[in-house]
Length: 140
Image (tube, rainbow, N blue to C red; front, side):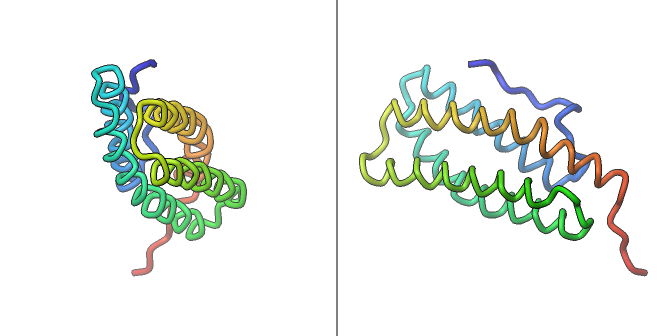
């Protein structure tokens, strides 16, 4: 699969969110290398553990930020998060039932890449653009 590399086009301008996206890219690349290097099972376990916290911490951070700025397309964004949470839950269930295997590692790699490309490059870019136009007002 194509290599993911962080670049300026991926930046939302929100340090916490960008750091989380950078880490996800790093994890995707590690899983990809492990699949082709014969170490998919070990990396799959690490990716599942990582995604367990990512889907909660990252999605909660984004949704909280969108609420603060009254983002008009928040329901669609949250719906996409819900879809990924369901996808991840299905893959984790399969992992819990059958254990780590190369097929599941490849499926997770493919699905996370697809998610990242569609969600970050389209949906996250849209709310980041809105945030730049409507910055959070702080009291003072």
